Image (cartoon, rainbow, N blue to C red; front, side, top):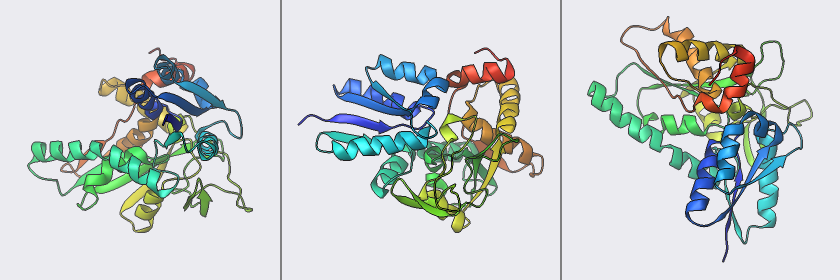
Amino acid sequence: MYFERLWGIPGAGYAGKMLSMAAKKFGLKCKIFMGAKDIKRQRPNVEAMRKNNAEIVPVNTGSQTLVDAVSECMRYWVSNCDTTHMCVGSTVGPNIFIKICAWSTAQISRELIKQVKEEFGKIPDKLKLLNCVGGGSSAMGFWNEFLDTKAQLVGIEAGGPKKSKRHAAPLTYGSKIGILHGAAQYVNQDFEGQIEETESISAGLDYPGVSPIHCFLKDTKRARYTAASDEDALEAFKIVSKYEIIRPSLEPCHAFSVAISEAKKLSKDTIVIVNSCGDAYKDRKILKKKLGVKL
């Protein structure tokens, strides 16, 4: 039987890039569904997928972002499930896809908890783990091994432009429970229950819902969620790239923004770790336009 790997790709494109590499390695065809808007703003990752012989399917419906790409991928998959696999790179959708993605990304925290113990001899009593949250995959990977510890978990959503009412922060701004991509979750919706369009400078966070796992962590108060605006993320990029000699993508810049603002209020024995889950090269056009930065 011949299998064709499919992907309802997160806007940033990292998972799609990795999937295309795996498909090429094992001689499988690879079809990548990606919002037309995200294809334009994440060009470097799209080019990498094409080099791996992946077919890029632009999604021109709705907001032309992640939410529409996932929908189109699911529609294709249910019509071709005898010969295809659907690979979801975020902790969204039906339960099995959430479990698969969460287990895979948990390797981040498996390595991190080992490094923390080597550095401090134990897991510090005052440990804060900050991660950006869109669908929620990287945050789950970053937090997984620390869920049963005393570590404080802080998720940072995309607050969107300060002058806009649109955002991608359903946990922060009190969105109601709804159904999106086969799962109950907090989701941006209007009074009739229709999914609202989001707006964020970050393609990887531009999603109207959030993983049911994060909804649970919020409801049980195991994790705290807040938001950073587009402007906050850009300012954080300038600070981090200057003083830390790294170039984080716009997704983790949201988390860096909150880390910078909250660090002033913390005691000196508090350990703060931010997951810099992306490189700015993919955002080079946006950064050049907004900040005049050339990468």
